[in-house]
Image 1 (spheres, rainbow, N blue to C red):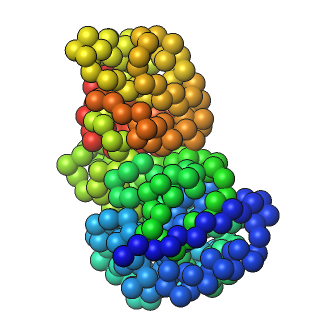
Image 2 (image 1 turned 135 degrees about the vertical axis):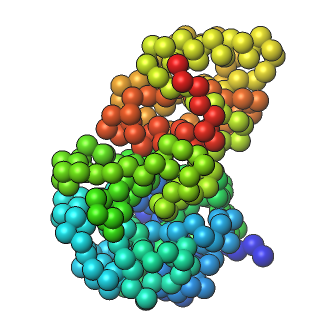
Length: 350
């Protein structure tokens, strides 16, 4: 049964309290609201009500054993949700909250199994977005919110992308303009002896190591056959409509190899898409559907543009897509993680 989805435009810096109050009432009453954060748009529900959380999985077509993140408005709200706050978690909270960092800790029983995927841990984030924090504050509840897209699709960084996927499936969409970071939050498990990076994001590995001294990396980040513990990372994700192959290695070598692959495919009469830097785009022949994600050395710009680049192939139909990998330093680690997932781990090392 289709829902009449309401659409509200809100200023990201000074949101209309009346609109947010209306959205908060929807959440308190068990409904679904899509809202912007600094990372991507989230699909929110009352994180303490199992039936409301179940609606998220239904709307997204998301497997129910895939954990969700609980979003809070103030750091002290963590105490209601977790058994203890490890010292490493305190250090991260003090340094990076509010911001694009999710921390995994042991949960209290108040957190429903539907949020945790049956795990004894819960992932919690204090977003930096004014809209997100004020909306959560008005509900007085922790808000469970994965990305506001159909499961397996690229995450939305605009309200228009949310509406394209979820109109008729959710009660309301808050349009706060494009997201600032463009990839989901970093997820760190603080229940392990050494904190473990489960998902790279806006808080980089280098930043985590500067704060914590030592950080392990979940091996599932690079091995498709392993099942990661992070929210949103268990199943194929971020995928455009056509099959995509990722080329990774040295920048110049990747550009040359990608150009060669494109020329071969063009010669076979295929419709080609290319997710590439501005520098590599200049090398490609006419007729290729280009999704330019930015300049090769600017991982921040690439992160902001990445999902819109992948979504562009919904309108520009192609048979195959080739994607240009980038350096994995800084935010590049998060970009490459998303590209590997979008490619279904079809990777050519050059």
